Structure formats: structure tokens, C-alpha cells
Picture 1 (cartoon, rainbow, N blue to C red):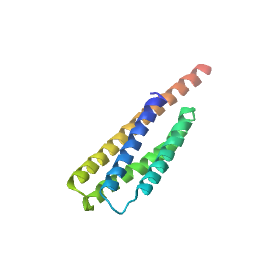
Picture 2 (cartoon, rainbow, N blue to C red):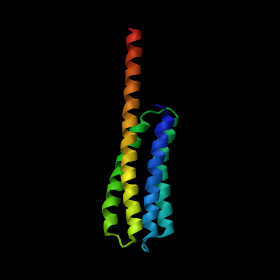
Picture 3 (tube, rainbow, N blue to C red):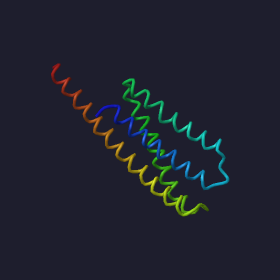
Picture 4 (cartoon, helix red, strand yellow):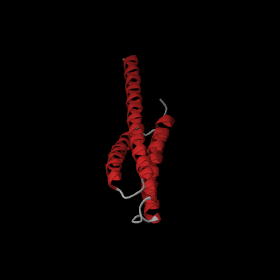
Length: 133
């Protein structure tokens, strides 16, 4: 499992989050375009910094990104719950519900990939330690 695949999974999660925000923004007169852009920039930074560190082979960055992914998984669940009370069209509600479910699935798959990657790194390190003895 390469860092590239893990970063692509994280980017998919970010994209789903931004799409949900756009869907909420389209159906609400209370949210400004400026607030939408600020939220997208903050989310991109929260995802981008650990992904950049991981690209530079700082493996602890995946732990940080994992915490961020947990936060955004909770936000997907919250969005799915709140969208049912929103005063937007039924089609935007359905789309946002589906996007929320997709975001949860993407994050769960990402966590599975990270755990497999971590297990491989630990096994490789153990083999190297056994050879050096």
C-alpha cells in the first residue's frame, strides 16, 4: 500500500465533504458563499498538511490524518441527521443523504487501508530486526 493510495482516499473524503457543503449552501439562504469558501479552505488545509507530511515519509502524519478523518466522519453523520430537518428541496436532501453515506464508506475504507499499511510496516520492521540479530 503506497502513500499515494492513502492520499487519494483522503482526497475523496475531502471532495465528499465539500460537495455536502455545496449542497447545503444551495438550499440555504442563511449561508453565504464566503462562508462556504472559508469552510472549504480550512478543510483542505486540515487534510492537506498531514497528506503533505505523509508524502515526505513522516508516517506519524497518518495518525493525525486519522483524527481528522474521525472528525469528518462525525460531521458526515451530523449532516445526514440535520438534512432531514432542512427546508430545502427533497432532491437536495436525498443527494446530501447519499453523499453523507458515501463519505462514511470512503472514510471506513481509508481506515482499513491505513491499518493494512501499518501492519505491513510493522511486519517489515520485525523481519529487519530479526535479521540483524
